[in-house]
Amino acid sequence: MSLIRHFINGREVADAQRTGPVFNPATGEQQHEVAFASVGEVEQAIAAASAALPGWRATGLIKRADVFFKLRHLLVERQGELAAILTSEHGKVLSDAAGEISRGIENVEFAAGLVHLLKGEHSEQVARGVDVHSLKQPVGVVGAITPFNFPVMVPLWMVASAIACGNTVVLKPSEKDPSAAIFLAKLFQEAGLPDGVLNVVHGDKVAVDAILDSPDVRAVSFVGSTPIAKSIYERASANGKRVQALGGAKNHMVVMPDADLEGAADAAVSAAYGSAGERCMAVSVLVAVGEVADDLVEAVRSRMGALVIGDGTDAASEMGPLITREHRDKVASYVTGASAEGATVVVDGTIQRFDGDGFFVGVSLLDRVKPGMKVYDDEIFGPVLSVVRVESYEEAVALINANRFANGTAIFTRDGGTARQFEFDIEVGMVGVNVPIPVPIGAYSFGGWKNSLFGDSHIYGPESVHFYTRSKVVTTRWPNPSESQVNLGFPSNH
Image (cartoon, rainbow, N blue to C red; front, side, top):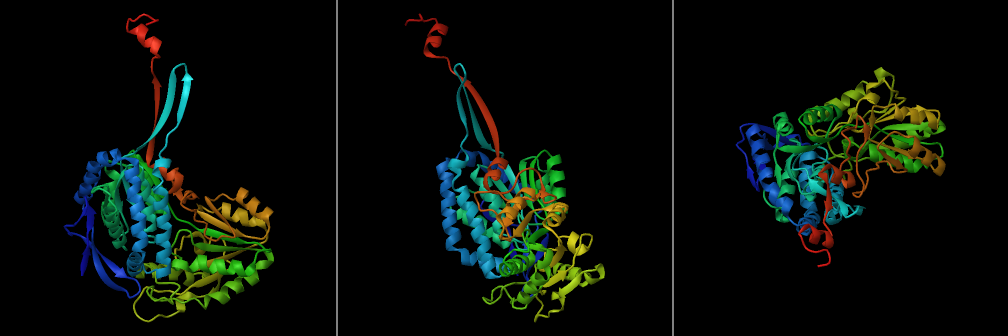
């Protein structure tokens, strides 16, 4: 069984004193072992990043940009190979894997514009003979801690921006699907990135804590669940680091009575069950306003039976397995307990049976869900869609604004006035109008509000440039020629 090693200072290393299993979720079989880093190995990676920092910071911006142009070419050229790695360890279908890579490439393209992104400002003659200009300079060594559900996209969201800004990086990917991070590191190396600028360490809390506690790591980026995001933020910020920690979500999709019902139902099915619901922007609550509820529930239910669930390598599959057996069982427990809480189980995906030992579960639809039920309050992170019935637009907005999560939301309506009012009223970081999963394009930034974000900076896009750089303001005054002559003892008319 092959061992997945760390990537430190341009080469794969591991003493492998501790390891963890890496499964193929579609078969339930262990296919690799992954080395778990000791504190010493994390410190080795941080030392490599620290040593590489002066040279990378001094590298000309055009040469930095060239790395990203080459990296984009390599990602496009080898997209199929990388997608296969994603599917084998995460389980998502190949089309989802390819889509994830494409969204990651968007941030590589954004980072390639670093010559423009890193421009400062200049003010001439703020006082007689005095000018002021500002600079954007790297923060130093950056720690990046990424989740299992997007093992290519989220690392590229962090790593590309951080490196473009002149920083060096220690990346700690999820130990559940770690191979993609090593593949990315090697592509960066092939694109011309100097050794030590990007290092990858695998592992568990030991590796994470070593990053959070190191005095040489100046900033930490994290994506994961809300409890862990809060813990990461508190520990890292207490150690004087910049922190952006993106947490969980409970994304609501409002369907107004005037909405295109067929389009809304199609959107709800794809947004709730795509990638088996294992994404922080998945729609998990369908808010049916007024008389649309019965027809909307039926329209969603009628589409669910046509979904093909199977091995992600099968081109016919539209949804793959969940990441682990334990997570599959936890997701199923929400559905089996829903009726006792007062919800109506319209479709019970837990009763669907699959051949083999893969971590599969069917898709579920729950109606008449209310706040206070576990299926509503918790982030399930699986293919479970809850329907909450409300009587008015105002009740829908109040429901969403009262939720502790505020990552993404959407409204489906034909009325431009309603859509504009929703944009104004809603207290959520990312909003879609007739778009169920409003993930911003690479030129904007991604992030929620409330318990979906700890820290003040969203990820990728313009806010990432702010997060991964420090501003320096320089005030200058040069004597004019006549002053120089007088000060040097020359006649003023010389």
